[in-house]
Image (cartoon, rainbow, N blue to C red):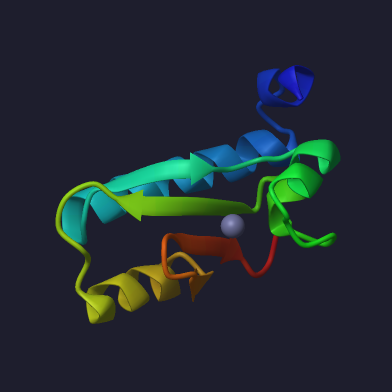
Length: 101
Ligand SMILES: [Zn+2]
């Protein structure tokens, strides 16, 4: 995992760059995100009850809670469309994932 993040061309590093851009856009235009989960090992994914084919395993999903105000739903969906993300509103958190890794 550390080696993947040290290599700027790895899938994980490129996903990280995209997530940071998306999180910055959320903060500026929608609401303040707090990331509670990103990349998971298979063992960690099992421990937290993730799906066997979870996009968290490849770094292509993040879970977010909102720090202060909740986002405007329309603004949130527009931002997801701009970044080609699928949003699953889980109730106690938001799950975002890239549809095309
Ligand atoms: Zn998730």
